[in-house]
Length: 96
Image 1 (cartoon, rainbow, N blue to C red):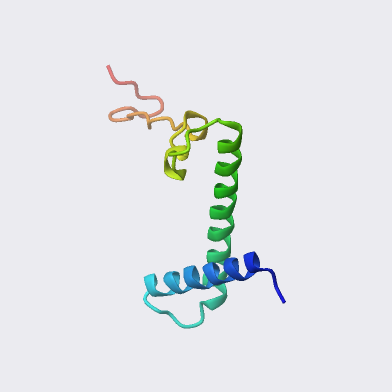
Image 2: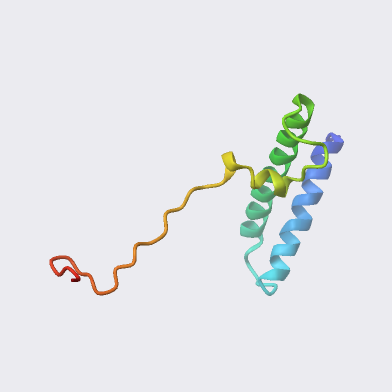
C-alpha cells in the first residue's frame, strides 16, 4: 500500500492534468504531455511549500506571508534590462 502523501500527490497531479486538458480544449493524444506538465507543476508547488515552511521555522518571513509574496522578495526577482531604443540609428549611421 502506498503512503498517503504519494496518493495525495498523485491525485493532485491527476486533477492538474485534467485541468490542463480542459484548458487546451480537450485534445486527444496529449495525456502523457499533460501528465508530465502536471507532475512538474505539483513538484514545484510542493517544493515551494516546503521552503516556506522552513523559512517560517527559522523566522525569515512572517506567518502570514504567502508564496506569491515570497516571489516578490528582491532576492527572487529576476533583473531585466530595458531594450535600447534604436530609432533612427543603424550601425555606421549615427543620429545627429
